[in-house]
Image (cartoon, rainbow, N blue to C red):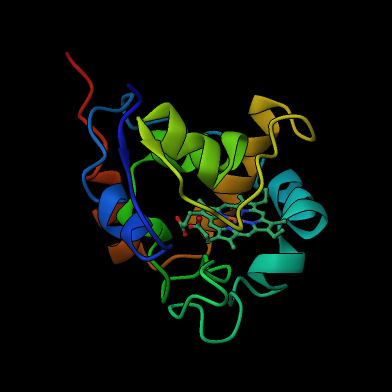
Length: 149
Ligand code: HEC
Protein backbone atom coordinates (compact mmCIF):
# COMPACT_ATOMS: atom_id res chain seq x y z
CA UNK A 1 0.00 0.00 0.00
CA UNK A 2 1.54 3.27 -1.05
CA UNK A 3 0.53 6.22 1.02
CA UNK A 4 -2.56 8.32 1.01
CA UNK A 5 -4.26 9.83 -1.98
CA UNK A 6 -4.80 13.54 -2.02
CA UNK A 7 -7.13 15.25 -4.45
CA UNK A 8 -6.33 18.54 -6.13
CA UNK A 9 -3.29 20.74 -6.02
CA UNK A 10 -3.81 22.92 -2.97
CA UNK A 11 -2.75 20.36 -0.36
CA UNK A 12 0.79 20.39 -1.77
CA UNK A 13 1.61 23.59 0.04
CA UNK A 14 0.22 22.31 3.28
CA UNK A 15 2.09 19.05 2.95
CA UNK A 16 5.35 20.82 2.26
CA UNK A 17 5.11 22.56 5.58
CA UNK A 18 5.34 19.18 7.27
CA UNK A 19 8.54 18.30 5.52
CA UNK A 20 10.82 16.66 8.00
CA UNK A 21 14.53 16.29 8.52
CA UNK A 22 16.98 17.84 6.10
CA UNK A 23 20.68 18.26 5.60
CA UNK A 24 22.67 20.85 7.47
CA UNK A 25 22.15 24.33 6.15
CA UNK A 26 25.24 25.33 4.21
CA UNK A 27 24.59 23.82 0.81
CA UNK A 28 23.84 27.25 -0.60
CA UNK A 29 27.06 28.87 0.55
CA UNK A 30 30.10 29.37 -1.72
CA UNK A 31 28.11 28.71 -4.86
CA UNK A 32 28.53 30.28 -8.28
CA UNK A 33 25.67 32.76 -8.18
CA UNK A 34 26.41 34.20 -11.60
CA UNK A 35 26.26 30.74 -13.14
CA UNK A 36 23.04 30.20 -11.21
CA UNK A 37 21.55 33.30 -12.79
CA UNK A 38 22.40 32.07 -16.29
CA UNK A 39 20.94 28.65 -15.50
CA UNK A 40 17.84 30.24 -13.99
CA UNK A 41 17.18 32.04 -17.30
CA UNK A 42 17.65 28.79 -19.20
CA UNK A 43 15.70 26.40 -17.02
CA UNK A 44 13.30 28.29 -14.75
CA UNK A 45 12.41 31.74 -16.11
CA UNK A 46 9.88 30.47 -18.67
CA UNK A 47 7.58 29.44 -15.81
CA UNK A 48 8.80 31.27 -12.70
CA UNK A 49 9.34 34.57 -14.53
CA UNK A 50 12.41 36.47 -15.75
CA UNK A 51 12.31 38.50 -12.52
CA UNK A 52 11.27 35.57 -10.32
CA UNK A 53 7.77 37.00 -10.24
CA UNK A 54 5.94 33.73 -10.92
CA UNK A 55 2.81 33.29 -13.00
CA UNK A 56 -0.30 35.47 -12.57
CA UNK A 57 -2.74 34.32 -9.87
CA UNK A 58 -0.23 31.71 -8.76
CA UNK A 59 -2.20 30.82 -5.65
CA UNK A 60 -5.21 29.72 -7.70
CA UNK A 61 -5.12 26.26 -9.29
CA UNK A 62 -5.98 26.18 -12.97
CA UNK A 63 -7.57 22.91 -14.12
CA UNK A 64 -6.47 21.39 -10.84
CA UNK A 65 -2.80 22.35 -11.21
CA UNK A 66 -1.11 25.25 -9.46
CA UNK A 67 0.66 27.87 -11.60
CA UNK A 68 4.36 28.50 -10.97
CA UNK A 69 4.87 30.57 -7.79
CA UNK A 70 7.33 33.47 -7.57
CA UNK A 71 10.80 32.71 -6.22
CA UNK A 72 11.28 36.23 -4.94
CA UNK A 73 10.48 37.23 -1.37
CA UNK A 74 6.74 37.49 -2.15
CA UNK A 75 6.50 33.73 -2.76
CA UNK A 76 6.95 30.81 -0.41
CA UNK A 77 10.23 29.37 -1.68
CA UNK A 78 11.99 30.77 1.40
CA UNK A 79 9.57 28.89 3.66
CA UNK A 80 11.33 25.65 2.72
CA UNK A 81 14.63 24.18 3.80
CA UNK A 82 17.47 23.67 1.33
CA UNK A 83 16.96 19.94 0.95
CA UNK A 84 13.33 20.31 0.00
CA UNK A 85 14.09 23.02 -2.56
CA UNK A 86 16.79 20.83 -4.06
CA UNK A 87 14.60 17.72 -4.23
CA UNK A 88 11.70 19.70 -5.63
CA UNK A 89 13.89 20.99 -8.44
CA UNK A 90 15.60 17.70 -9.15
CA UNK A 91 12.61 15.37 -8.96
CA UNK A 92 9.68 17.67 -9.75
CA UNK A 93 6.54 18.08 -7.67
CA UNK A 94 4.78 14.82 -8.51
CA UNK A 95 7.81 12.57 -7.99
CA UNK A 96 8.81 14.38 -4.80
CA UNK A 97 5.40 13.75 -3.30
CA UNK A 98 5.47 10.11 -4.43
CA UNK A 99 8.89 9.72 -2.81
CA UNK A 100 7.23 10.93 0.39
CA UNK A 101 4.38 8.44 0.01
CA UNK A 102 1.75 10.84 -1.29
CA UNK A 103 0.33 9.52 -4.54
CA UNK A 104 -1.97 11.26 -7.01
CA UNK A 105 -0.76 14.85 -6.89
CA UNK A 106 -0.49 16.48 -10.26
CA UNK A 107 2.22 19.12 -10.18
CA UNK A 108 3.20 21.55 -12.92
CA UNK A 109 6.80 21.54 -11.65
CA UNK A 110 8.91 19.26 -13.88
CA UNK A 111 11.89 17.31 -12.53
CA UNK A 112 15.06 18.91 -13.86
CA UNK A 113 17.45 16.21 -12.70
CA UNK A 114 18.10 15.05 -16.27
CA UNK A 115 18.72 18.56 -17.57
CA UNK A 116 20.96 19.79 -14.75
CA UNK A 117 23.72 18.45 -12.51
CA UNK A 118 23.36 18.60 -8.73
CA UNK A 119 25.90 21.44 -8.58
CA UNK A 120 23.96 23.41 -11.17
CA UNK A 121 20.77 23.01 -9.15
CA UNK A 122 22.55 24.33 -6.03
CA UNK A 123 23.90 27.27 -8.06
CA UNK A 124 20.39 28.19 -9.22
CA UNK A 125 18.99 27.93 -5.70
CA UNK A 126 21.84 30.07 -4.43
CA UNK A 127 21.07 32.68 -7.09
CA UNK A 128 17.41 32.65 -6.03
CA UNK A 129 18.45 33.11 -2.40
CA UNK A 130 20.76 35.99 -3.35
CA UNK A 131 17.71 38.02 -4.43
CA UNK A 132 16.07 37.85 -0.99
CA UNK A 133 16.45 40.57 1.65
CA UNK A 134 18.72 39.68 4.59
CA UNK A 135 15.81 39.13 6.96
CA UNK A 136 14.20 36.56 4.65
CA UNK A 137 17.53 34.83 4.14
CA UNK A 138 17.99 34.52 7.87
CA UNK A 139 14.53 33.05 8.31
CA UNK A 140 15.14 30.52 5.54
CA UNK A 141 18.53 29.60 7.00
CA UNK A 142 16.76 28.92 10.28
CA UNK A 143 14.67 26.23 8.59
CA UNK A 144 17.75 24.10 8.10
CA UNK A 145 18.93 22.00 11.02
CA UNK A 146 22.06 23.50 12.60
CA UNK A 147 25.50 21.97 12.09
CA UNK A 148 27.03 20.00 14.91
CA UNK A 149 30.21 21.32 16.59
C1 HEC B 1 7.36 24.06 -16.89
C2 HEC B 1 7.27 25.10 -15.89
C3 HEC B 1 8.33 25.13 -14.80
C4 HEC B 1 9.70 25.18 -14.92
C5 HEC B 1 10.53 25.19 -16.21
C6 HEC B 1 10.23 25.26 -13.57
N1 HEC B 1 9.20 25.23 -12.66
FE1 HEC B 1 9.36 25.22 -10.63
N2 HEC B 1 7.36 25.05 -10.43
C7 HEC B 1 6.45 25.08 -11.49
C8 HEC B 1 5.11 25.02 -10.96
C9 HEC B 1 3.84 25.03 -11.81
C10 HEC B 1 5.23 24.95 -9.57
C11 HEC B 1 4.08 24.92 -8.55
C12 HEC B 1 3.41 23.60 -8.54
C13 HEC B 1 3.86 22.77 -7.41
O1 HEC B 1 4.21 23.31 -6.35
O2 HEC B 1 3.87 21.56 -7.56
C14 HEC B 1 6.65 24.97 -9.27
C15 HEC B 1 7.18 24.89 -8.00
C16 HEC B 1 8.53 24.96 -7.70
C17 HEC B 1 9.09 24.87 -6.37
C18 HEC B 1 8.30 24.60 -5.09
C19 HEC B 1 7.58 25.83 -4.65
C20 HEC B 1 8.49 26.86 -4.06
O3 HEC B 1 8.39 28.03 -4.41
O4 HEC B 1 9.30 26.48 -3.22
C21 HEC B 1 10.43 25.03 -6.50
C22 HEC B 1 11.47 25.02 -5.39
C23 HEC B 1 10.72 25.22 -7.90
N3 HEC B 1 9.53 25.16 -8.61
C24 HEC B 1 11.98 25.47 -8.41
C25 HEC B 1 12.27 25.57 -9.77
C26 HEC B 1 13.59 25.83 -10.29
C27 HEC B 1 14.82 26.09 -9.45
C28 HEC B 1 13.48 25.78 -11.65
C29 HEC B 1 14.59 25.91 -12.68
C30 HEC B 1 15.79 25.16 -12.40
C31 HEC B 1 12.09 25.52 -11.98
N4 HEC B 1 11.38 25.43 -10.81
C32 HEC B 1 11.58 25.38 -13.27
C33 HEC B 1 6.76 25.14 -12.83
C34 HEC B 1 8.02 25.16 -13.38
